[in-house]
Amino acid sequence: MDLLKECAGAESIGISTHIRPDGDAVGSSMALYLYLKKQCPNAEIKLFMETPPDCFRYLKYFGDIDSAYAYDKPFDVFFVLDTVPDRLGEAEKFFDCAKKKINIDHHISNKNGCGDVNVVLPEIGSTSEVLYGLLDEAYLDTDIAVALYTGIIHDTGVFQYSNTTPQTMRVAARLMEFDFPFFKIIEESFYQKTYRQNQILGRALMESIRFMDGRCIVSCVDKSMMQFYDVKPADLDGIVNQLRNIKGVNCAVFLYETGLMEYKVSMRSDEMVDVSKVAAYFGGGGHMRAAGCTMKGTVHDVINNLSLHIEKQLKEKEVCTTES
Ligand code: 5GP
Ligand code: MN
Image 1 (spheres, rainbow, N blue to C red):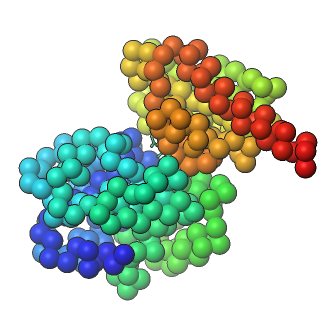
Image 2 (cartoon, protein in one colour):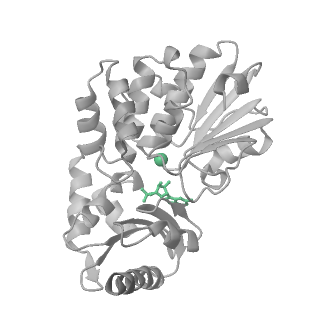
């Protein structure tokens, strides 16, 4: 896809990403916003998403993000980044009536893309890395590099997860040439947590339960706990990764209560479990080793239903390993 050709002549361009935006969602959509602002000076360009966590405030034009979704005309071009439309939240209304829809993503659960033009590459670790491949090198600048770098480090766990490739490192190296304090970005947007975030992390770890001989672990945070520690859902990011880091654990499940008998599920795994399949079964999606969904029922129902699928995969893998 030639990004600028697709936008040629457009008078209005909208960009949005998934609800509860994470580093890749914020980084990729901000990078595209910065790029188009410079390259399409005659177009009105709008960037919509739920208010991102404060740790991303260093991004240039962070204040331009419209979380009120205030726009009342159909966009000539509308970009959906790092998701499919059903997780756009309020921005779905812009997608529905846009004249041209462009989908840029890397989720394996996004089978065919939802746009008139689609670039969906599940083998690439972040939407930011996918987007880098679509931008003209000659038009990159420091602000765009910072936004893309942010997305890449968040979705690869600072180059730790198996979705990191030699090309990821080449892209990151190229971006670092723009000479920004990458170490500060890693520290402040990825590793640093507030005191309250750490407290609830500690509580979630303390109350976690292991099953299947310690190969699976689950922890749940309910609304009263969130109120007690005065935290929002975004403050819970990272808990599931800590659960997954425990020796012997193949699959970690973290739940938090979103409504009456409703839970948001986050799963992380190693090569023993494909959590994107588990999440897809319950109407969610994601990647092989990081996926999520929303489920109804009591916390016990949710855990029982998920664990059936996880155990099935673990048992199938066991059979394969003993047979080979
Ligand atoms: P997280 O556990 O960090 O919320 O999400 C892990 C991965 O799964 C991310 O790539 C995220 O976009 C995806 N994901 C999480 N929840 C859902 C969901 O409800 N539906 C879909 N399609 N993807 C999800
Ligand atoms: Mn992503």
